[in-house]
Image 1: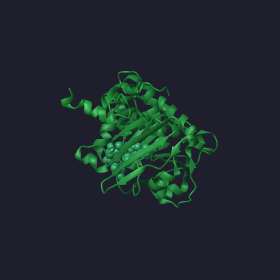
Image 2: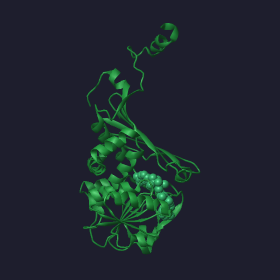
Image 3: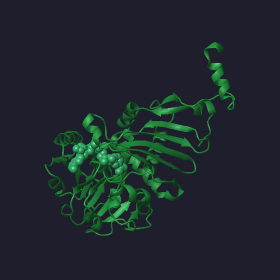
Length: 353
Ligand code: NAD
């Protein structure tokens, strides 16, 4: 990182929701996801270089608020994110987020950004990247169960990275399915809206579950998952919040991001603590196998890990540096003499003018 003048560092670039949407539309959603997936893959491949902890979660009756920090030798990133499944009922989103990316050398933030849109993009990019390692060869059809905010991003990522052209949709709320069907037909997918989850999985080689409910839900039962399927389970991401019947887990080879976090938050919270799982970074580095047979059921037990956000922040910093996608925020005090913080305040008082 180049060390900038302190006064330059004090004005922190900020990417608003409006500018994020402009950037993503200018780049193209699928191109953006494709490039972002490369950043995520590169960071997964250098996994041991990161200082990692499970995210810090503050649970309440209706949801969770989480901080997701991670650092390498040069950069520190964190995301603030919530998960409140009942929000939609009141016209609010289930998941909102913002994030910060900082210089390890100075501790100064280099970027502050909205991350609600960026989380949907990075979650989809991660899912499809993992799908490229685990989904059966030639997969062209995906079931999408849960047709809320994440749904279309998942479909686009799986088209870009895995070649999915047909999606089979199901949501307990038909309005959500109608919304997703319209959005996905508009961008060229073959779409079938289904009336049950059982109907949605018919003929699909990949099943994505992205529902939101703060309970041990059963979105997929064991009989719905045939040999050779890849399951991309993203909605079970909190203690007491899962989507898959336990029997499915016992038949699957399970792939995870960061085991200390997934054991608490993922589908595998339903299993014994020593149940064998495979870490994705090792698959990406070629150290262990991913899909090894046609009949194997593979499960990405996704909870979302801080390195994915770090990659997204790193990508965004490079994409937006010195562009008008950022505005400069007067976020940090920068006294001429770094030790004279009080003097700066005193000189700013009205009577000093
Ligand atoms: P959302 O509230 O916008 O959409 C969720 C949808 O699930 C709603 O349309 C709802 O009607 C539907 N649903 C609820 N119960 C269902 C059931 N039994 N069967 C079918 N559909 C059902 O939420 P979102 O932003 O799309 O997020 C979806 C899930 O993904 C959430 O649980 C969220 O916490 C999780 N998530 C995970 C990651 C990750 O990295 N793993 C990232 C972002 C979000």
